[in-house]
Structure formats: structure tokens, C-alpha cells
Length: 185
Length: 185
DNA sequence: CGCAACATGTAAACGGTTACATGATTCA
DNA sequence: TGAATCATGTAACCGTTTACATGTTGCG
Picture 1 (tube, rainbow over the protein chains, first blue to last red):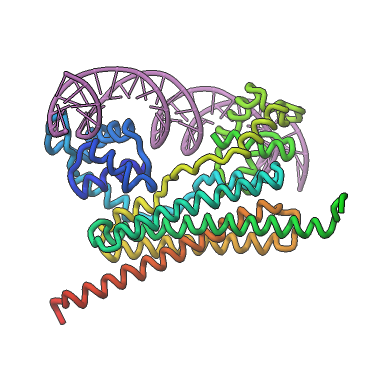
Picture 2 (picture 1 turned 30 degrees about the vertical axis):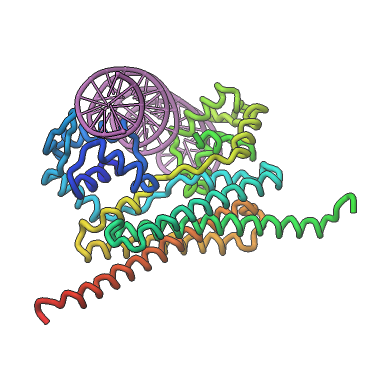
């Protein structure tokens, strides 16, 4: 139930409305913890009912600015401090890889190539983010930069792994071609 | 809806019962696409209703051995062939990192150290898998080895990133200590 | 005989997605 | 005045988790 803690964390940084929070989910948190409008508003109401948040101020257009309560603060810290054993996360890429032998070699290569390109494109977009905040000490705090570095490394991993996989397939294809010479030489 | 395609893929490899499939989800697919008993059995029934699977044989204890139908095979291939734009996946690690500044430096370090150790332990367990299948050409097919390599690289990434992050924090702490000399020199 | 393993199912609750719905305010 | 933005909410549906529930077969 981490959406809950994301909201507590953001409101703890500074009081905000659902609309404000939604913008954060569509920008800084977009690649970390996506959330929909529907989800954010209903979770804010639940958190208020539970006494973890409170409406500190009301503005125009029914704007409700939420603030962290003492028990909300406590719950945030409790969540942050405990380090749960990481549970396996679903990985659609690897699931597809498991069944890649059902495709033709050409289709399998096309799949890996497409993934490689997606990863490279994402990597470059993160590189751009890195450049954009390079001289701005405040834009992303220390911990934000740690998260960015993780993204850079992960996208590089996916790109390089796809590249490596393509080489493995080529190597195996070459070996088989040598062992079983073609019908039409 | 990838559980569906995991089931089609597994049954396509060889006909199997829900119980058989469940064992696969608890072993080979455990770190790729976890699924519960409840989910597997109900999805098998849905797939049968949709005509993507059929009960090819019945055994003792009400055992139902499923087989892929022609449309099931078609659906599996359709799924494998299309390469969707990768959508961002939730990353609880990074969400926690975003709010790590709410903890004391000591707690933040403890968090990263724990993650580092988890990643290293997982990496070593995969290394062991690698050794176990090293001389067994059949145990894991070509594509299974690609998945294993991905796991090895990812766990190494998490370990190294946590290590690097700890160094960053130490470096920053040292800089601040130099700028703002301690109260008790 | 009794236990472990085999084998399948249902129901409630939860978190997330999609779509629908409404209205106020600002500013060009 | 009209459009963009601000602002909040609800309902239906889907995939997943947890818990409950039941019965059979093989084997030592």
C-alpha cells in the first residue's frame, strides 16, 4: 500500500491539494510510482478519515489543502524505517523471453532489438534530465539524484543486456549453421 | 493480462494440470511472474471458456490436463510478436529513496546497507543456479539463460548502486563537516 | 492406517485502471 | 465570452491476495 506512503511523504514535504499532488505524480514520480487522478483523490479522503492527514486550508474552487497530522508523520517514519524483504516483482520482459523460442529467429531478434532501442531512448532522456539539473543544486535533492542514477544504470542495463542477448543468439545460430550445413550451399 | 499468456506459454510447451502449472510458478517463474493457486485455477477455467485451452485428458483426483487449442496458440503468438511500449513500473525502492531525507543519516545508511546485502544475497543465489546448470545443456534452454543473465545483472546493479549511494552520502557528510566545523572540536 | 502429496474450487477484500461527471476561476 | 486550467468526485471493472473449503490417491 505504497500510494498511501507516497502521499504522506509529499504532503509532509509541504501541504498540497489533490490537484497539486497529481501534478507531482505526473512529473517527478511518473517513473517511480504512477497514480491516477481517481486513486489520488479517494486515497486522500481515506487518509483524512483515518486521521493521517487533515484539511489545513480551503481555497477557491473547493480546493482542499492537506497537511500531515502527528499520526501521519509517525506512520511515514514507521514505513521508511522498516526495510521489508524485497518481494519478487513481475517482469513482463523476462516472461516474454521465457517463451521467445516460439517465435522465428527473425521475430525474436526483432523483439530484442526493439527493447534495446526503447531502453536506449529512455536512457538518453534521463541523461537529458541529468544535464538539465546539473548546475541547479536545489532542483533535485541528494536523494533525488540517487534515484536518477538508479534509472540511468537500469536503462543502460536493459540496453546492454539486449545487445548481449542478440550476440548470444547470433553465436548460437553460427554454431548451428557450421554443424548442420545449409541445404543450398 | 500476462498471467493468461504465461499459462498459454506453459501449456503450449507441454500439456499440464493446474497443479503442475502451480509448481512451475513456484519455481522457474517465481522471480518472473508470481501467481497464486487461486489465480491459476480460475484463469484456467476462463481460458477454457474462451476456447484458448481445452481439457485434453482427465486423471485421478479430478485431475484436468489442459492442452492448447488452435486459437490459444494463435493468441500466444500474437502476444509474443507485438512489442508494446514499455510502461513505467512501480519501484518501491526508489519511492523510499525519494523520502529518505526524513530519516536520520544513520537510518538512511542502514536502509541502503540492508538493500545492498539483500541484493548481494540474491545475486549469489543466482550464481548458484548458474553453476548448477552449467553442464546441463537442457536444464535451461537458450532463452532461460538470457533471463538468468538479466537477473544476475540486475542484482549486481542494485548492490553496486546501493554501495555507490552510501559513498555519495559519506562524501556529502564529509563536505558538510568541513564547512561547518563541529561544536565540540 | 495415516500422512503427505495431489488436486480443485469459492468468496471477500484490496489496489489500480478507465470512463464518466460536474463545476469554478482565470485570463486573453 | 470562451477556452484552458483548476479542482473534486463516483462507478464499473479487472487482476491480485488471502483465507476458507473439500476431497482423493499413493505409499510407507
